[in-house]
Image (tube, rainbow, N blue to C red; front, side, top):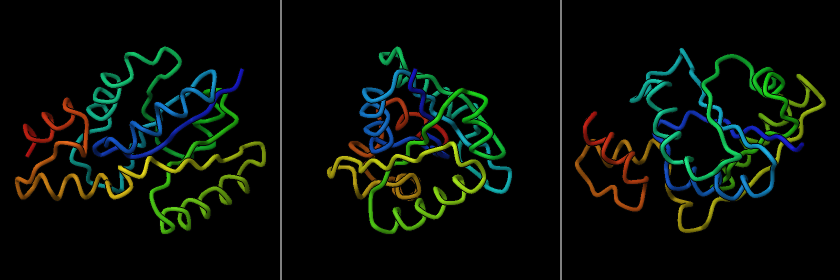
Length: 157
């Protein structure tokens, strides 16, 4: 069985993230979306809230699940029987950062491969930070994040 992990903060999940999830779900027998609970960050949504939003969005994908984790990604992958780490890319800047992380994960555990997926070009400008910034100034969020996420953002801000 081919099992992959797609990790991220997902604060909040965007249409770009969802694009990667849907496409990666077709490549693996099982895909686990790992919501990172990073105690060093001050997210808009708690890890549990982020997981709930993702759970709503993946209901129609029977081979996709979501779980919260903290600590090392390779440990989370190992606990879930994954051998591949999926990373979504928007830009060359994303690649530079994610390439370093892939090398670190490989050094921590050589068993793991990282697969880079480019998001669909129509989402390449979208980031969670940008979505929060637009929301803060009451800008239009349609097209940036799924409807259920937009509603939660508006309720939160």
